Image (cartoon, rainbow, N blue to C red):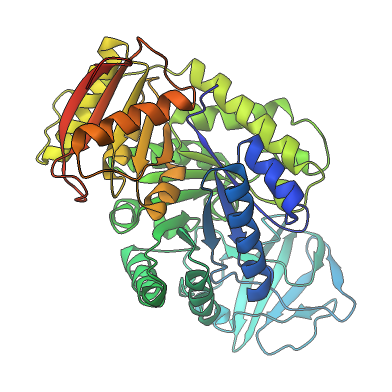
Length: 478
């Protein structure tokens, strides 16, 4: 069964062996996420090599995404590993404290006192602990515990409503970008960007670091700061896609605001011809259980119905007991949700103007395939742009993007409803088209007598050169 929505999965201790990873790929894994918040450069290098080898064995390309840690603001360590905070008690966050106790704890972000004022609310450990800021004295933030609980080493800190000045790219992130480029990753996810400038800086660093390796990755902005919401369009314009990172975002803007923001972000990304990944706790219970909760099934299905390009797994696949089953289950949910998704292609095209020939051909192919009942759309593409434009609209007609470029093939692994395939295109158009049909038929996507819509550029081999649309029946002479 063709699945349009892609699956991104984090690999970690539970999923780094070749045997498990290969099973995950066969189960439906499209993009592997390397979480640079954990592990060494050597760990990431070894995992990236395993991914490439397993993908080769599986006979298809699997993309790799490097997810940068970003300025995760955390408390320091406690002399006893943790403390228990009671409502109403005073507690001090001290930038100069070396080892915490029951009265105070240190900070890894030393400028935090400068960002705060009396009346601010701090949320620790993903919002499970709430502190009211009473006053700031030098390096000390004096607070009163509003919601207590156990606070252990290195738990995260957010300010309710956002507003912390920590830069999106830390020194560690810059070093990690260099490591990621040496691994030839296909996507870089930037944590906590506030504006377009953060994304432009990350892209520039990645392009410079990737130049010796011939790597130019797609840049994904993780939307997890309150400040990113009003700047969403400029962040989209400066990125290749966004991630709806619901964890930290929910802590800053409140849990209740996230579902509507998710729908808005997915809609804006698609309208801007950008990618969108929905992430965080999608199948959380499957870290320990072999089946998801009904609420998790609905969560994944609703993201699919919203039009997300991909759904993402974090701890479920990195450290969970059932990484393969989780992917199988998620894939099945996606397929079922897609069956009921309503296409509004004609409505999408109303009042729409296209200034580029290649974009007009892409839209023409969608419209034609939808109304003629074609079995497939086959796009011969160098850069993948034609496939990206097609993937922004839902037609229930699968799109097969054939490219001679491995980098384009991997990048298209994240495009909704696009199956990327490798094709060593001939300089002769008719030969290339015949080869394209043969590839699609050989893989069982179309049979003799089926109608297929083809797009190609003439002369062949020029990015952005798609200028021809052709309708054929499989078995006819081209």
